[in-house]
Image 1: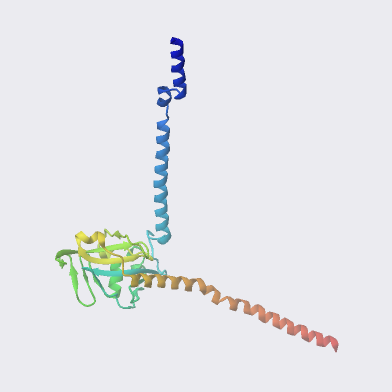
Image 2: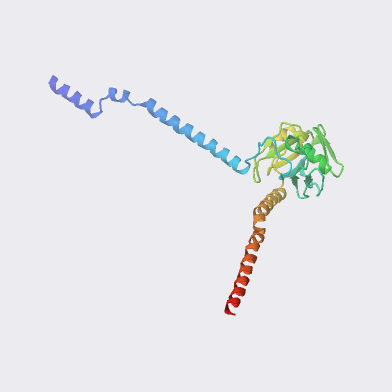
Amino acid sequence: MGRASSNKKVARVAGTGGGRTGSSNTPWSYFGLIALIVVVGVALTYTSRQGYINKKHHPKATAAAAPKVGTTWYTGLGVYTCGTWQAPIKKTTSPTGLTALGNGVMKISPKTKAVAGHNATLGAWAKAVGLDLTGTSIKLPDGKTYSNGDKCDGKAGTLYVMQFPYVGAAAGTLQTAKAPDVRLANNVLLTVAFVPSSDKGKIPPPPQSVQRALKHTVASATTTTTTTPTTTAPTTTAPSTTSTTAKSSSTGKSTKSHKK
């Protein structure tokens, strides 16, 4: 009787794969490590992807000493005051090379070192196009001035500059430097905004009209640069064609002489 009972216990233990001893050996630490590796891998992949996107759209946003004399950059600009977009700065010319194209696009083509490199700032551009911009105020072409502390929708307003890394970007970076000291970058969007401090995180990118103008201007400049070499190609082959013709004529003369 006792032996039969023992045999039943052994059978039950075998049926459960070892009973308590089997369950206590489950490699939970191994599974936890695998889960941790997966989570970290996903996080790193996401971070890398976002970095690639930003670099693809704006590869030289942090270029230190540019733009240099002789280079040309374009930036989209919008002036946003108390919830209203102001008209773009009218088309201008300037011996400095910093001009407005009249459609919201800033042309940054330094002619001297005084406005190149680290000196290529929003303040330098504003001065060149006749826009009165300080660290605490902006005076529009129509004479209207917005200064820190002035009422904006019933609240005290403050001057801010938000930079968006590329056309179509919805999120921007609030610049810590004062408006005139903000360094210019290539193919980005800038919004100079006068809004209450509670709205500084809601500053929008420049209007779609400005973004389209910037995209078109950059595309046109790129196309012109790319196609320029092909326009000179025929002139390089002309001499060889003339040479071949002359040779044929010479051969013809010698043939006639031989027949005589």
